[in-house]
Length: 347
Figure: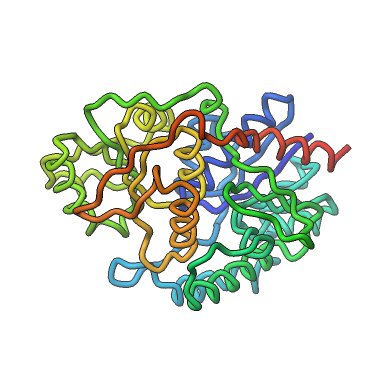
């Protein structure tokens, strides 16, 4: 089976999910061509080789005065919905030679057009489908509920029709009338044999440039706890001014190893990293990206489900204890379930 897998390029969480699914497919003897750019292109090329990654344009976030601008993001990305037929033409010509059997879209709008043109099955695989197919957690504001509704409309616009909708998310229920396939956590196979073994020496910071303002408070916490902070996800220049923080280069294996031996993590509550920390039991202080409503909703879900493991970050925050090994969820085989569904679709 040849799988053309398109994913949004500027967030590392989508890339982590693609790494998990891609490796499972390859291990089973299938071929995968990833279509993406940015951070995702870098991580996927490092693992699978440049020949397995085709650069395409994908939607991205836009900032205003260093903060996420929802309006500018919507306006700047509208071409992917209203001009996708034109945007997808070069990709379709390339894929006519590669001859995929199925396309997969992870929050990416061109794969649907590819499947329509090549007359092959299309699969929408993401976490954002839960906006449509799951009840929202308690305690959301009216604004957050409206934003969630809009988020569900966007993910459906990316894949207006699909032969299969796969949801990789934990801590959510499924609406009775939903036809989506919920597979649980889609984790990289490296996590199958990993456990949290804190070193007592440092903590991990997993952040983005939009949260540069939080580094000063994180540095103060590091000094208070007398532990170094290993910072991933931002340029070295952003970290150099802080005496208790150490910049870490982008490295898939280096990041996983650092997380497994960290005393705790300070991180944006993206879907993938929350699923990974949930499987390990490591304590997490969460720093949602301002105006990123999905992360705000994720944070509520994590705290409601695991108050002993998750809390919101602030300078005076008490670090959670972490989860007991006996309480860790076992539904972490979403990677295999998702690929089983893909194989079943093309038989």
